[in-house]
Length: 336
Length: 280
Image (cartoon, rainbow over all chains, first blue to last red):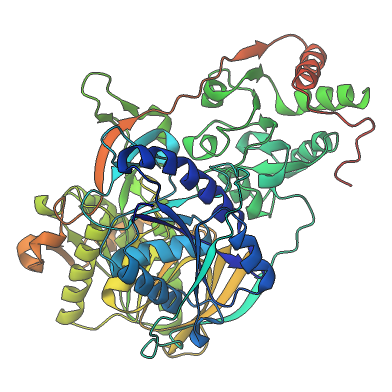
């Protein structure tokens, strides 16, 4: 086996490992095939988990398809503290010098990755939409710019690890053969780490009454063109006819307070979704939104402006008044 | 409470659809797209003004930008900031987030050494153009103080500058409530507030407020840590993502459109549930 290591941060959210870990591990396994062509042997895929794991979590990591599970443990790592967590992870990196380190672009990942970039004086690419090796063997990280209108290649040619964050939902989780990973404990030296600079006082879990957009098979999404609060209900009525459906929104609709669930916002600063069916209503097609739906299977757009940008990225274009079209669609669905 | 706010001029995000890659030069063509103050940074300025109204103190805004960034700093002075620093030099150009935050840290330290130190540095969590969200964490880490990103609420008690702030950080399943000890760097999202409009009086007052420009000589930075050379990441090619969709337009009366749409949805295998009721 090559002595290169690919680290993947395994975020432990109250006893379950975040999906991002499995998605990134799947991508890393695919990258490893290409890496093997250059190096003659694959890199080690390493899960990096901080804090007490518990039996179930450890088992899910051991069976995830990774080669090694690094379990970083210390009494100061009980409650999430970004300063202490990043120091602990940095110490493991200084010892092992991973070739690549992947993080999910979650709140935790987007805090730890750039902090680690400073501690290790290396490059970090953010919210990558693809990761690959080019023909010279360089690790290319594709990042969106201008809301996803443009994709730029980022390289970290001179320093290690090459750190990248990827939004949950960008890569798909593959079924990897379990390798019965070796669990290696790592005890960082945190005697001098202050734990009182940032103290997690309380976690306010948002009650989910509806299916999260990123898990929905059908998304009916409303934008500024919905016009007013009253019209917003029409989206819900359409969603009502589809299993595993959710109502999404754009930034302008959220700003208008037509919905108060900011967790349903789709796009650069919101969720990345890949539903089977996406129906966008009254959405102009700003890049910040569009880049969050590019992997939807069927994109239907309804807008009264026939030149709306959203039509350039849609499979089905409907020019017309949102309320009139939605009313007709609802009546038609009722006949099914 | 003395507060530094980091702002960045960005091309207006409303107009990103008109940004294109020149097929000849392979460079970005953003001609005609005006610069605005990054929307989340305006929220950071607003949050700073709110804290200043409670605790007093000064607000100094920093921008690392070409010389025309001055105009954008004047806008946030008009909003209510007290003082502005434009960090500008050709040597700073081409910096990635690590080199940018190093340069900003040098500017913050210089300003602090000339007068009152900062209790708090605020910044928009991410810029609309690059959107990495790295700068608050990387500035905080290099300043050697506590830092948090993705903050949607800041609570501060009492009449005097407190030792710590209660802040709410947005995460996937809700909000984390942290107590963060000052001095600290906090990245705020646009959820935190709605920035105030600038008044005509604000614009007039802004012209009389202190305005500094720091070039490379003024900051005397480690030259290996600024600009392109100081950036561990290098930019490769740029390209436009291929949407790969052939758009079909449905026309006719709303009823005809609805009928055709439902047929096409069913053809993809998506099931329609008779009588609805999926979201009740």
